[in-house]
Amino acid sequence: MPNSEPVSNNLGITPRAENYSDWYNELVLRAGLADYSAVRGCMVIRPHGYALWELMQRALDDMFKATGHQNAYFPLFIPKSFLEREAEHVKGFAKECAVVTHHRLMADPDGTGLMVDPESKLEEELIIRPTSETIIWNSYTKWIQSYRDLPVLINQWVNVVRWEMRTRLFLRTAEFLWQEGHTAHATYDEAEQEALTILEVYRRFAEEWMAVPVLTGLKSEVEKFAGADHTYCIEALTQDLRAIQAGTSHHLGQNFAKAFGTQFQSQEGKLEYVYATSWGVSTRLVGTVIMAHSDDKGLVVPPRLAPVQVVIVPMGRDEETRSRTIEAADRLAADLRTQGWDGSPMRVHVDKRDKESPGFKFNDWELKGACLRVELGPRDLEAGTCVIARRDTGDKTTEPLAPGLPAKLASLLGEIQDGLLRRATEMRETNTRRVDTWAEFEELFSGEKAPGLVVAHWDGTSETENEIAERTRATIRCIPLKGLQPEDDQPGKCVLSGKPSQRRVVFAKAY
Image (tube, rainbow, N blue to C red; front, side, top):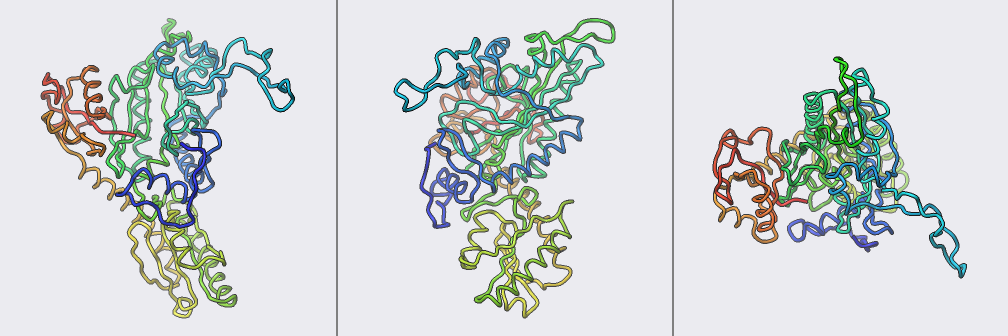
């Protein structure tokens, strides 16, 4: 990621078909979602992008609390020795860790700058949080003594650092925002149920809020979280036919409990290690929404997550007519907020900018993803009408400025929400195919383009999985909990090795 990049004043962006990567980067920048930072690999989330993330947070937080979870906060700094206690965990994150070695600066000898004070070296290095299992389990060991202390159901909303050098705004940055849940349970089955409960929360959020259909299932041993017994995931498909991991829920078994000595006295009076889960989604979800729905005009976002659901553009060539249309726009905005949609006041903005043309504003709000645009000019006021434009389809209709208008717009928001999920689902189904021969598999994944989701048999070995990835750059994205079609759950022969396979799994090129 470069430190800076010039952004054209032209609202046009590179078409997806011409260069999908450029389209995505330009859209994020020009829609005012994020910007590059002076710190290489990091991003600045701008207000429009952060508003989208806040709406995601609010919805997910309500869903977590409805399933019995509470929010807490744990330190940003983790002693290096904590990561060393769980061997697979430290192995998985060692190359991504940012390390604090000193705690003080001082003036350099020539007085022109600053240097690290060599006398301030820490006795033990501190790792800037890449994930919080170790620091949290250190606390859980103190808090959990008896079966009466279980379960512990805690979530936190924080930033994490994973030292990525090949980055892309929202999708992969050195620092990003996320939530991470960490729970402790008395039995394996209780932890398993927790992991599946959260997987269902993530699925519902993706489909009901993001309007993105997702596959739910297990990660392979190669792809699972470092230190987990097994990992569940939700996987989405972007418009350039690559998979994107949108969320994960990990059953950690007793690995971290044994590493940190977290035991409880059971009802039978025995000392037992607890079972654990961890789970998380991040600002990568913003990138997922963009890649699932947006078009060559800019951002398309489902109404439930849209920072601006309705934008009203009052027009007029002089101050007198502008004054009348702005007054009418303000009244309509108040009515829309009172009407509400989906249990909340509508998020309405009246664009009163006087230095920009109506055409510029129309293009600007298409770029920024307002779900509905209301055009209100002096002739509209005389006729008692307004023009409504839908962002998802581009359709425009003339509607009466009457008491029923707020309900009409609320109904349109519902249509857009449902329509985006339907469109994304059809796109995924169209680009999912079943393959039985290695020749066909290899041909599909040849070159730079991605073929979508390829459902094929695999013999269950890491050796075969790694060889497939080396030869085609296709990875196992998901071992579905239930086959996409009934025959997917039937045994067959591995697409590469020809050895027996218990069922089909889903391969794709991925972000």
